[in-house]
Length: 132
Image 1 (tube, rainbow, N blue to C red):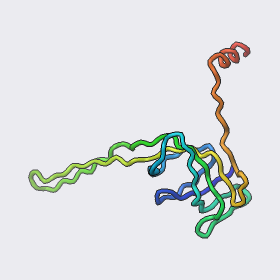
Image 2 (image 1 turned 180 degrees about the vertical axis):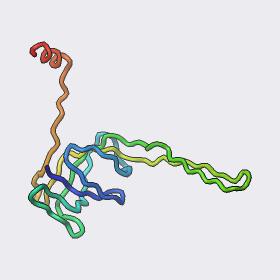
Image 3 (image 1 turned 30 degrees about the horizontal axis):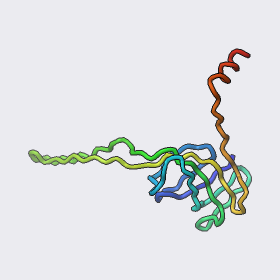
Image 4 (image 1 turned 30 degrees about the vertical axis):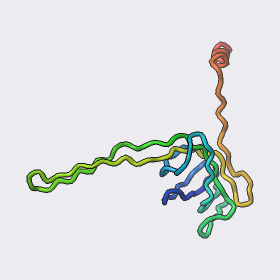
């Protein structure tokens, strides 16, 4: 199974094709759009590993943006031991949820690709159940 190490939002992620993950919010991105990550630090599989210095030139990872949203609220509460000396604050970090589709090597070959999920109709599902 091939993997790649990408860098986005100041963080590094080890990704495989077909994987869904939360990353820092991508600016100016719309839902169901295609995203390319060109900052690939390393890629490989069980036999071969290609490591960049600092990035691998020509390698890329393609992904689909599933949604942009906000995480749960993180409460910040500060209290000092004086009367009425307290402060409550909250923060909701924005994130983008993506699904990794393809991992390309530095010479443009596809290392791994996620499987296409075909949407079957209710009739086809009913026919399969009757046939069994």
